[in-house]
Length: 258
Image (tube, rainbow, N blue to C red):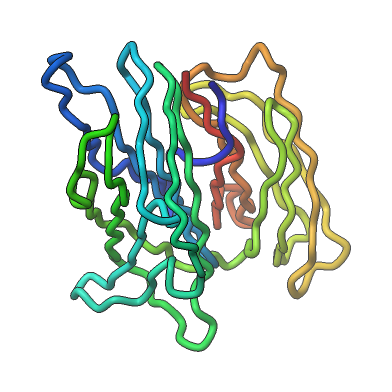
C-alpha cells in the first residue's frame, strides 16, 4: 500500500515517528493493531499523520461513540495548550464503525496552520494524540487504550524558501512555493534518504530581490520509487563565495509503505 505524506527530515524540518502502541489480543497471543503517529514540521504548518495498522490475520472492527475518531492536542514544552484539533469542528452523536482488514492501514491526517496572531518561536513542542475507540470486536474499551504524547521540533525560518506545498503521487509531483534568492537561481535534488533519484536541477527566478512564486514539476521513474520509505526533495541556494549549499529546505514528496 502506498500513501501520500510523511517521513524523514534533515536540517530544519522533521518527520518524527511517535512510539507505536498496540492492542494485545490475548486469544491470538500477539499484537494486532498498531497505532503510529508521524509529525512533519514545516515553517508555516505542522502535518500530523496517524496510522492504524492491522498486523493480524483477521479483520478488526472498531466502534466509536461519535463521529469524532480521535483527538489531537499541541502543547508548548512547558505544558501550555496551544492547539486542539476538535476545537473548531462539529461532530454528530452518530456512532461510527471502522473495519480494518488484515495488513490494511487506516490513515488520518491533520494539518495545523500556525496562528498568525502570535508567532510561534522555533523550539520544542509536544503533541498528544488519542484514538477515541469505545469497542473492539464487540468488547468495551477504555478511551485511554490508544494514547500517546511526543515531542517535536518547530524549525527555524528559512531565508530563501517559504509557503511550500506539494501535490501528486506515484512519481509525479508538483511543488509550489515562494523563493527569495539574491543570485536569481536556486537548485533542487530528489532522493530517498539513500539513493539520489533526481540529480541537481537549476531553476531561475524572474527577479533577484523579494519573494517570487515558483512552480516545479518533478518526475521520478516508477522503478526507482522505494517500497518502504520517503521520497524527499531538497531546495537550496549555493554560496556566491565558495559554491557551498546554503538555506537548504528539504520536504517530503511522498511516503511509501507496504
